[in-house]
Amino acid sequence: MNRLRFVLCVCGGNCPGFSNLNIWDFVNRVRNELPVEYAIVHSMLCDEDGDRFLADYLKKGNKYIVAGCKPNMQKKLFKDAFSKAGLDIEKDLISIDVRMMGTDKAVEIVKSAIEEGK
Image (cartoon, rainbow, N blue to C red):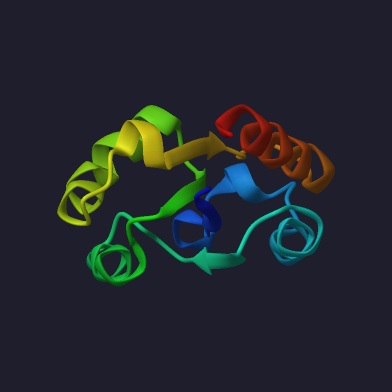
């Protein structure tokens, strides 16, 4: 079974879509309450350092949950990184949008995504 790795992209920290989300409580709840190998916060995955991070982070044998912007945007932004790592973005990425949600709702969305992605 693939190990699940969680990344929260906070869009530079200035996105008003995250104003209802307690980012640190959310990540700690995902890390402690859900079956993920670990949870990471990245400031902006769509920037150059995000590309470098993904190049180091993505490994075969894992499945990745990325919470941030719209899933279709994530697939466009991360397609090359997943391909270079030998991963199939359609199978190895669980992409979720947690903007405009409170912490409890965001945790439930991640939990549901994990169940659906198994």
